[in-house]
Length: 115
Length: 115
Image (cartoon, rainbow over all chains, first blue to last red; front, side):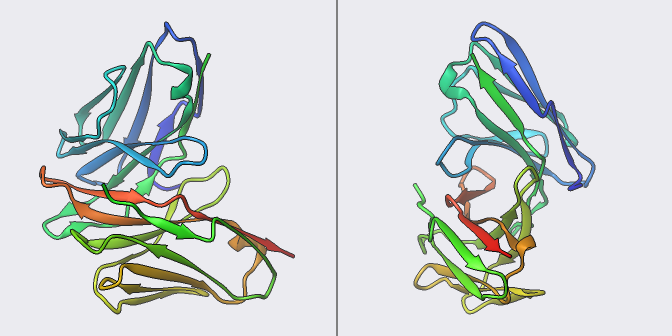
């Protein structure tokens, strides 16, 4: 148990569906992240939220829409996805200070399949 | 764009053998180097965060070194055990310039320890 919880663990959705991934951390961290891992690729950073404000969007298509209502919760809203979006989506949190990041804590991920 | 490279891609060792892997990263805009262990069906778990050239860190049978001038880090496992089987990820931490730090991951080294 890392202190970062993701739901659901598995998700199958059609290309016209709308779904949301949820991430929750109770570690008191001020930064939260969404990562994507596709087969044979490294973890790719999608979004960064720092003190609930989005500070990074690494050229992610608009069919992925993040939301951070408070410092403990992070959502990834999905709509009109493509089959190539099928991947493992990982949430992480960390404490960001003036001199960088402490270690990141990861959730177990959501295995997404788009059909 | 930062490229973090890890080698080898995969490794099979006998129980009791010692082993090591390499992570190379760009030296520019470097803040820290993170190592994570990712066991199947679990979350990535932090091993080390290193910042200074010449840093050496140890946790049980696992240790790591850092050379920021030439841009590489080594992870060593002494007397490998089956429970060490996992994918070992390294990530270079950099400042995005937009008010946040971010991690760029390598593809990982998959270690299998044969009993």
